[in-house]
Image 1 (cartoon, one colour):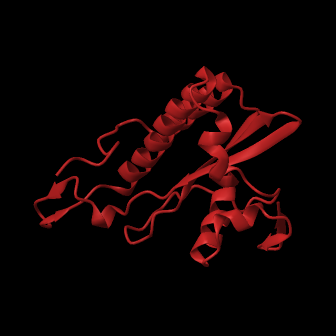
Image 2 (cartoon, rainbow, N blue to C red; image 1 turned 90 degrees about the vertical axis):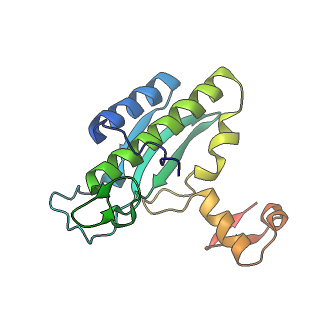
Length: 173
């Protein structure tokens, strides 16, 4: 079975975050925030579910700016198939390794897509539309979250483009 992407990374989370900040700066982003300003757990129980890891950045657009949010939830250390623990007879990866893996995934995704957008291979909006945040509050949903919720409720994508549709109390269109 092939290894999971980034599962063997040894790059610390802080170094991945610094690299993300550098890519965003070089690409023209106006600001960056990690994990919505939340506390970092210092003592983690092995049974704790992994917390989502988030990078948000402000991107300049014609006539203003947009906030973009990317979130990944690290895989559970309990369900890992990457490393075999002979003493326990199970496959395991530490929660710290899963965090490193999540942040390397975010880094490589941003590195590739921002370079493609900066080069002109694909428009920024085409890559990041579903990750654009719809409001000013920290917990505002993204365009993609609203769209997926609408589609899962049986709505049609075209209905979102018609004037007057209401989703989550916001007028779209």
